[in-house]
Picture 1 (cartoon, rainbow, N blue to C red):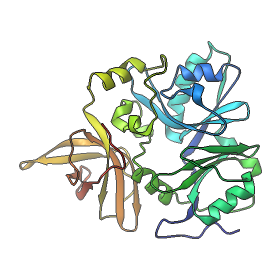
Picture 2: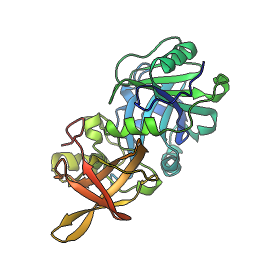
Picture 3: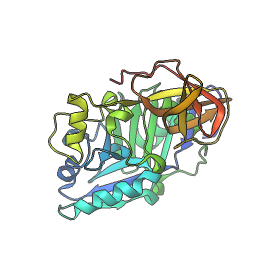
Length: 312
């Protein structure tokens, strides 16, 4: 089976997501412990449904954003590699008081992302069937598959490297990155770690915060942000007609009269087909079609687009 064909229309692709890392939690108190650390309700995690969650410090600032998966006798957190180090250190710091083992297990896994018939055939060949429904999962000894329905149906595969067939996957992850950005999904990386509360990343709109669960790290700040309406920033999708390198961590500016003022910071970006699309944290009252320029390249003008959800 060949899985390296390039589709310029982004209707089918399979790529190796080599920027993803895996934190593995094992031990009889893994659920109880993680429940007190992250924003999702870990007690609702099942073998057939994943969770989106974030890990905060005591001030409510986000260390990492992760998919949470149940696999065999462990919990897997799929996050960006550059955010993993800080998040892992914080989890291990408090894990010494619980019956839980927490490790960076990235080297044992390959994360794949894609959509289309070829990828579906690959998943069926490796896992026997396809998961159905947003964030639903199937798993076996090979790993876990997540079904993601935004902005169009696609799949995230977290597979043990030892079970991978002899296939070369597309190394560029631009197609996956573009789909993630267009779904309005924020991702924390080293450049943006520990800067934003979850609502600035629109994570409440993606069901990554459970406001009914008990205490967890940063819970008081996250709750106050919701119930007291103190959030002044949110994430927005923007695009520009240009091609550029990764802009994660770069600053945006907006015009006031003849002057330009700080506007926000870019969380993730991708260039594809002479367009660059970004997700950036901006003032929450930013209007659609507003213009922002790149501080490091004033000629690069980005225009805000409509989000696929309400971020209030």
